[in-house]
Amino acid sequence: MIEIDGSQKSGSGTILRLSIAFSSITGKPIRIYNIRQNRPQPGLRPQHLEAVLTAAKLCNAYVEGARISSRELLYEPKDIKGGKFEAEIGTAGSISMLIMTVLPICIFAKSTVHLHISKGGTDVQHAPTINYMQSVFMPVLKQMGITASITVLKYGYYPKGMGEVTLTVEPCRELNPLVLEEPGKIKAIKGISVCTFLAEKRVAERQAAAAKEYLKERGCSADIRIVNDRSNPLQKGSSIVLWAETDKGALLGADAIGELQKTSEAVGRE
Image (cartoon, rainbow, N blue to C red; front, side, top):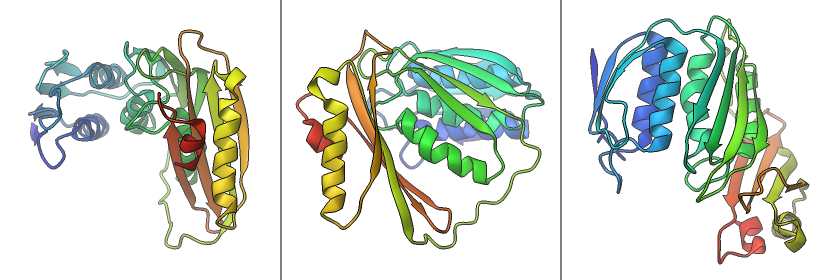
């Protein structure tokens, strides 16, 4: 049994997510204590709990302490299996962070994993946006021989969440090393600017225009796709992601999320 102190360094959910992923992959049981000790609300929050439970489904793990606010968790994994799975966060907790927990597990499954994730946040603070995951994170994984895809069914924002995505991951027979010894020269800058039920205010267009102007002032241009989304009538929100592609195969990405009292132009420049 490997014991892990969750209060180390930042004492954040990252320790929990990585511990669960590595335990599932190696088959070694773990006990995590002081979970998220250094956070304003220590212990498991809904998004962390759902990540643990989803990982447990993937490898038929025995789990103790899987409840909201729990600061200690026992996790004993078994063989990783493929198939269809469901995950429901129930808050605006980050779908992207849940994906980052379970995706490393999925690539070692015996067959394809189809995961449907609902009632979470696709674009929330302190986590990569779902378009960043699609356009930056997934292409990097592809360079390593990993075949995975994300489909956005509904965008979800703080405070209600209600986002919905599907994740499909094929078994990976051999992982390739990611060789990025030189950043290389930028050959293209691309992006996606999205808003949900804010088309009348031209939010996506204004975010993109501000980002383009900022780059133009620095001698760069960008091809930014506009998405005026109407998938989730319960939510209004926006985000923008930009990424640079280099001649050495590197992807350099960044994103920003719309907020109340923050102009679309400020989001684009950010």
